[in-house]
Length: 106
Image 1 (cartoon, rainbow, N blue to C red):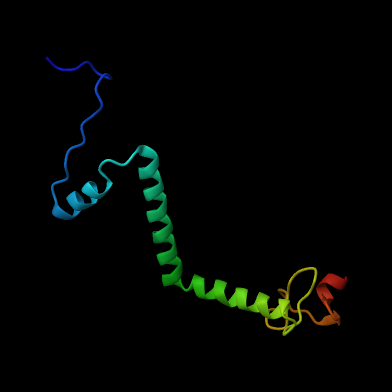
Image 2: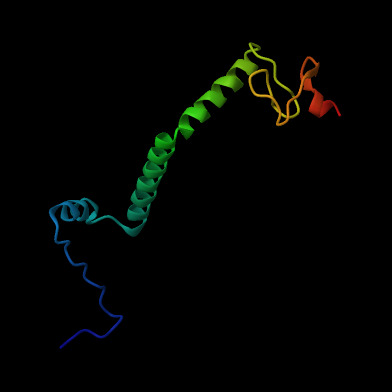
């Protein structure tokens, strides 16, 4: 006798390769919510690795360092658009006032 469709939960077949079996056993017994969290964490790790590989994280760190210099008063920054001495507006700008660039003064 076979169970009626929809009554029994589908049985998961054990993976055939050793590596896949180890991953499968690592997640065995987790609830659906826990599996989703693990999936999202793995995806975030993949994204961060890709960003690091492409050099994007270096750009983010450089931007944060620039903003820290502005906040500490070590570098001028426009109060409207955020341009600074080391990163001008597209097309260029000059300082009109202590904290306002020529693009924002128009």
